Image 1 (cartoon, helix red, strand yellow):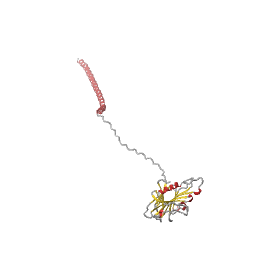
Image 2 (cartoon, one colour; image 1 turned 45 degrees about the vertical axis):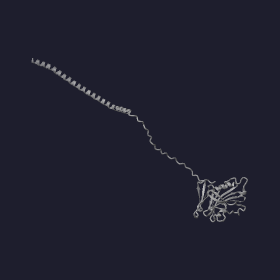
Image 3 (cartoon, one colour; image 1 turned 60 degrees about the vertical axis):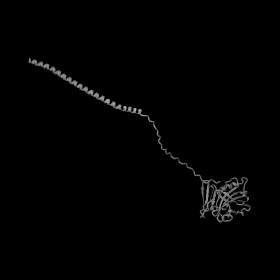
Image 4 (tube, one colour; image 1 turned 90 degrees about the vertical axis):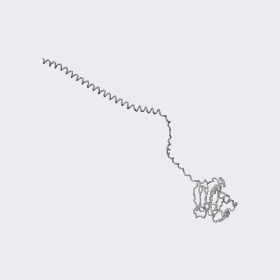
Length: 299
């Protein structure tokens, strides 16, 4: 009986033990499920919090922009002021200067520093001074006493008047240092060379800035004409002579007489430029000089 009782007890005890074990296993399973659910919920919550934080972070600039926009809209509109700054001038490259050929002056100036006399003559005329002077290319002097000194002779080109009997035209400068002022007003005509000449009476004329005593001489057969001008300066008598030469009897049928007044007019343009510079005392002979000048042309 006792054995049966023990078996019965064991039989009763085993179900209880099995139930307890089942209950314990279910409890453990519930615990695991609960913990897993909690962990899953925690994970989802963390994810949601993170997503919410990111969305809030990105929305802040939008709010700031909206605030700035509101501030800009609410602030008064200030008109824009345009300020023009001075612009620095652009350095332009200077143009290369054009090469201009230097034009030679049409006249030449003759100067004798010893006697302080000068005049201008056309460049196309020829000048002779010093040893180049000769009786054939000079006008005979017309001082009342011998002793004159020939300084220079200007000769017009022989082809200046084609188709006429023109042969030469001369402008001569001489000086006499031994004559007085009164003697300088007189003229001695070369009657031996021109016996038929009838000189006119001397007269006073002003040519340019100088007053001269002047006389004209007419040669025979109209072979030459001459005009003489005297002026007394620096203790000496200056003589300026002009002469026109023609071919005389050698004129052919195709040539006509040259207009002497026209020729003398050109020579007188040289006389207009004459200047006699006052000198305090005689200077040592330095010789004449010739230089170009920009003076008006003398034709």
